[in-house]
Length: 469
Image 1 (cartoon, rainbow, N blue to C red):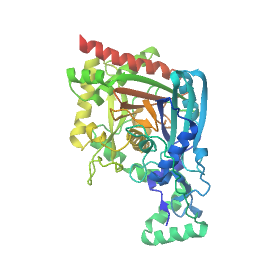
Image 2: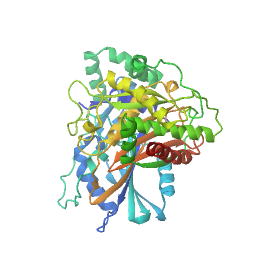
Image 3: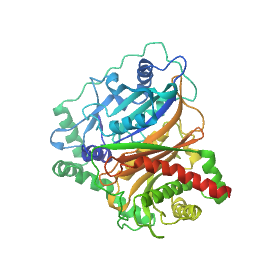
Image 4: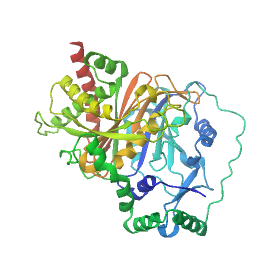
């Protein structure tokens, strides 16, 4: 019997429309080795690793009459060349050209008639670099049965492409409509309540499914200490269009740890304080009125421990991600007072749940941040969008160099999706001594997202200058 999508996975398919594609992604920059890193080598590497994540050869098939949720089936027409694509910038390609391309790729929804992922090799970057841009649907990565492909394509040491031929992949026969109906009836006999829910979801589209998924939101909001009141109004909450912009900022992990050493808290506290300082400068640059009590509410997904394990077993992350609503004190002019406010807000949450420490996440096999960013986006999508202004995900990564084949990764920027009425999302990942911010903005409402990116770096410098003084 084919695997059936969970209610949450199905909701991401039902909710998707041309304005809000439900995929996450990443931009990884590599130093091309002397031996080269060609498109053919990338395809070979992907083909060799696909066996580790069978879901990436499967597509979603609906059940006639919507009597049950869709199922995952092998795609008999799977073509790796369709999913692994090639692009190039006019030499020497700049960061601005690369990230403009990323914004355009983000805006295009994935084809739901094929496996729900794409990867682009972007050549022509200055300094002999190449980039990998990935897109993965939120219905695909659940952190248990399926992890992000970036977690299996990267190694801790250079790996020359294997020359021996891989065993041919033989897809299982795709079930026809009668078989899907019989399976649905069999499951209905075991769980009759699901028939009513599935028929209702066919009539009301995503509403019935997502209501069940988001049913615990009020309880969760109450548990984390912020009443379910609307988020503060402002330019971050706007009706988004189809077009996207992408911008980045960079910092050094040692600098953020230095600020933490002087004033306490965690590196996560420092990063959120950096975001608060940048948002303050950005709002002032737009002429927004700010008082001492002005806040911007961020939804901050956090990995937590479950009943079985602590998420440190390679390949078994678990999908335990909760979310904290944090009021970022953008009205506070003193950067260290902002830091203490943020630390206090997060400390209450960390004391009430079994959060996974950064050291535990770093022991997860492979490059876990893409998977955890995806789980963070899933958690955010389950919330009512009216109770927060933006999503900020921060996932620590390994502090050693990683390689795709023989190409060394030098930078990695998360790419987060936008919700329907939120014009900005920020993903943060640390890797090999650096901290990398990826900002996704609506092209109309956040036309100055690159300005905010520069202000993030200025906010880091403000904290450093004050700490040294």
